[in-house]
Length: 132
Image (cartoon, rainbow, N blue to C red; front, side, top):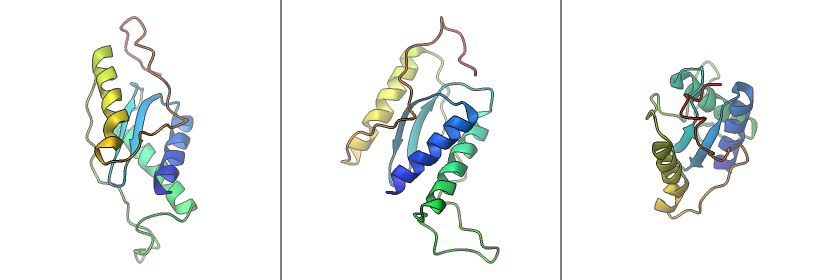
């Protein structure tokens, strides 16, 4: 239930910011995404994704830390402060990353995931940078 709520949050972030997401896996302790280059810095994109996912968890009353509201009425973030990011500069690198993300749930004995906000990768436009 929480993974689906996080996915709905990711979809909202994708729509609001015109992101192209080529792959996504949401697991109990982490998520993997492959995202096309954008005019926003990757750190900002990560913040948008985490923020919308957290809003959705709260909206659906599924936030894993909802019992730990602080004196300001805020719920602690379920996310790590940092994000691990890799910049991919070739079609082969992108395809390898997509395959890794798609296969990742199986490493935790979970089924592969299909998300309606993921756009299939159709290659880079003549090798040009994929900014939106």
